[in-house]
Length: 366
Ligand SMILES: Cc1ncc(C[n+]2csc(CCOP(=O)(O)OP(=O)(O)O)c2C)c(N)n1
Image 1: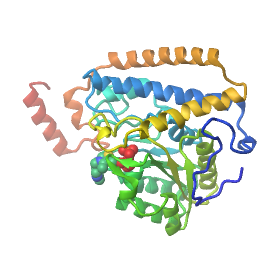
Image 2 (image 1 turned 60 degrees about the vertical axis):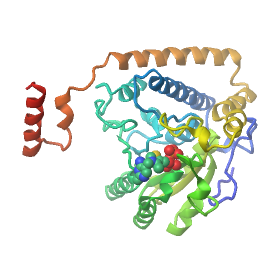
Image 3 (image 1 turned 90 degrees about the horizontal axis):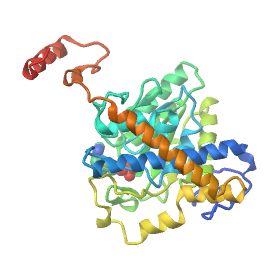
């Protein structure tokens, strides 16, 4: 299928009922790869459901679900290689799992335990892993965009074939970092993918109150790069557009903006009440008619790759895996209070040593 930038309607490979919207053979995906895509979406949803329950149980203080956005996160992360870098935001745990973060590490992060690669000491949804090339998101909306561009500039300078992807929401496009980042990346030909998950709300602020362009993708024109408007609930379309952007970046042809049009099922976070600003029926429409998992399952059933028995088996497998991973996180210990000043810099400085001594005296430990 021909993939064009700057379309008025989202690029899609699948109809909402899972029927192919055109020739998908050009994607070159094997049946095994299609099944891997499906398993990842089911797994991400199950991990996320488990994570959210922790707040309800009073065992975690905060959670921002990715439910509804699985196709965007899985489809884009599947084009990444080990050496590529992710700079995500507070709603990108699905991509982190695909990049290699273990569910046990994610749960440990949510519970604030040391099995978390950031040792349970980051703000909620600030997990990451140096080994996996996942930079911990920070709470400040949009600020990872410019950092991602810096990393991509280094990748180009070092003449690697690697790239950097940065995930952010529609709300982040109103931050200066978005505009600075896109401009810099285009000027320096940086191998970066700007992946905007447009779930249509920045907490309670609707997209129309955020921007007067019809799409976010078209903003790329102003910076001299291609912008693709893609159906973020169609994993094949997301994968295809992400692959195109990744191939372009690796070939030294610079950055791309992708807008994945999607919808979050949960409130903005566990601290939000979305019924106060989302019209009645909207969530139900997305859940029942546009769900990314159901849509892709229908496609697989249509291709005779899937049936009820396989679905049942997968759900049981995933349930057991999530339970195992959660058990590993649960037995992990909380961080020692005195480690709070470790890793501020690569080496502890004299003033951090002094603060550590003060804290130790306060806690009565050494
Ligand atoms: C600079 C800054 N402004 C405001 C906030 C408060 N805040 C946290 S998340 C958020 C909305 C983000 O919306 P979006 O970027 O669309 O991502 P989504 O949560 O919808 O995935 C806001 C306003 C913040 N953390 N940082």
